[in-house]
Length: 438
Ligand code: NAD
Image (tube, rainbow, N blue to C red; front, side):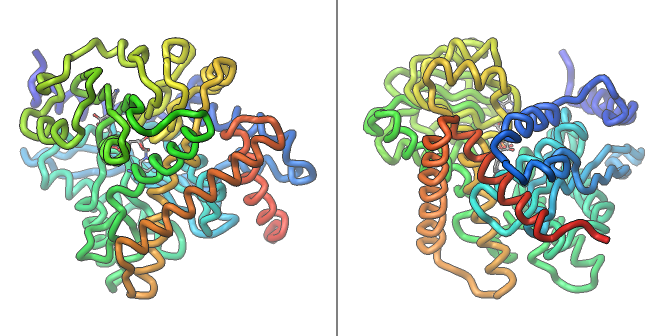
């Protein structure tokens, strides 16, 4: 059995190996984004002239992040910040700490942020960052040193009006607080607007914690209406039980749906009668695993895809719905809480099966929308009530869904292609108007 110390030694050894971005054989997730751009190009008319600017990230920063470990040794981690596009405003997008982070993944995630921000019409470009590390193997003080050194390294390109990071997988309000403090120390003043997803007491916004899950719910509910699925008693399967999956499960349940399956990195649990997401989170916190959750049976990881359900919410990582898993899915509606959970080939398969997919760039845009509210509140130092925030969020998400559904209907395309048509048109219109410098 691998002990935590062994695991940590292995991770650190791996982090010292050749940087992933030097591997030319492996285009990785960014290849998926390029395929999505190819698909939308025929719909761009004259703006297709500028489409190459979407294929190339504007700026890529790869940083070495050396830290002292608690045992006195020094470990080096590989960190990234990618600004995919800034035609419509400052770059905006989260920071991921995960052992499988690669440059290609961060490039893809930053590009999806460009599309997402434009699809819901936020005045931002797209950015994303990450460190190749399993944060669970670090002590709290190692994690703080890692976050601070990474922030310091990328501080040459981030800033409240340049590029605004936020939480993503394995990063949270505490990490945002360290990032804000480090940046502030570097520039000599408190700059709360440099990151979003901060604790409320440091200029965070009410409603940010649940915002992504709430947006998943609002767009999911519209899709269910369109697909003729009744919310009352609807069976929902959720993959990923973190910030997004947990909030989505809770909000769907509070509106009368029934969470029948949850999968996270620890286990997959199923109950035909329904799982209480609050009890599931309590169990996860108490036992460190979903396994053994009272009233639910543990099933094999691969069986998650075939559980009988009406709505499926992938809210973990990329490349989960593939040509292998898609044929097993029984849901009529898929709401992509995660970024990039469906491969293009699986997307085609789902379309043939008549499954309505709410794409990531729309479904999970609730997080960045409330991040936008947080940034606006920080600039004006005037804070809104949770009710105001939720009402504005619901309205933006619902209107975005309805207008994209309209475009999809008009062009007879999927919601994903519709989102790309609208977003890429907005980005390239800005590009064309701004022209090339010099
Ligand atoms: P998180 O770290 O809070 O949770 C991730 C969850 O995924 C955990 O429950 C983990 O156990 C599970 N998971 C990880 N690997 C898995 C695997 N191989 N199989 C099954 N489950 C696995 O992260 P999050 O913030 O909830 O983000 C989840 C997804 O949503 C990511 O794709 C992220 O980019 C996207 N997203 C997040 C936000 C946000 O506001 N946090 C906004 C938009 C999109």
